[in-house]
Length: 93
Image (cartoon, rainbow, N blue to C red; front, side, top):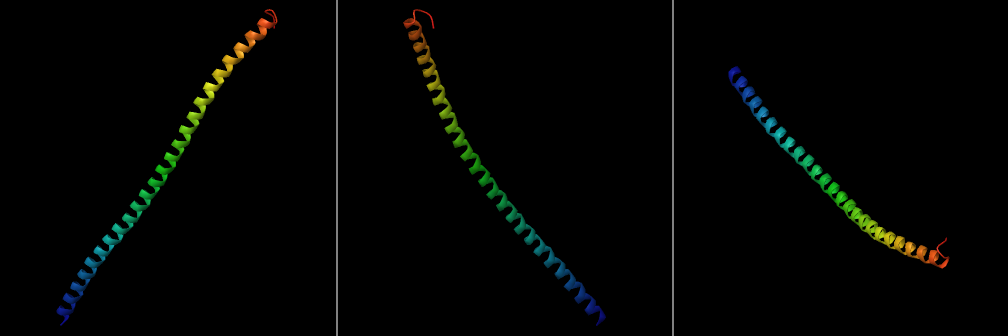
């Protein structure tokens, strides 16, 4: 009878070890899946933020280009105006 009990204890110990091993693997896989999901979510958020900043930067570049053209036009008009004033004053300003 003592041999049967020791065999029963060994079989139960083995079954418990195998069960614990598989439960541990499932838990680890689940936590890895959660971490991967969080990482993917963070990457999507970062990508959306970068895209938003890129659009804002495009707007700033377009505004800069428009202002640059307007300033060049104003400089030309100022130069023409200075020439007219100088001509009206007989060459002296």
